[in-house]
Length: 64
Image (cartoon, rainbow, N blue to C red; front, side, top):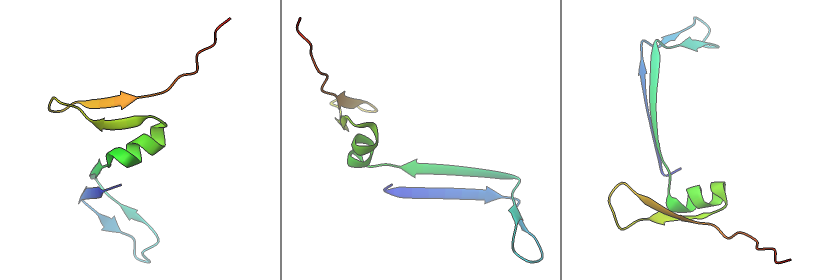
């Protein structure tokens, strides 16, 4: 993970700090192409067009 941003609204911590409750949580994670490639088992890279990715996977071919 390249970057993680977390916003918490209405956080309340219990008296002994063993628990915390939030009204809402908003999180955004930015992953590198290498991390996504490793997790999915395919090669992922930036595409030529904005907001697009290229993904390449090798598949076995069986000839009978």
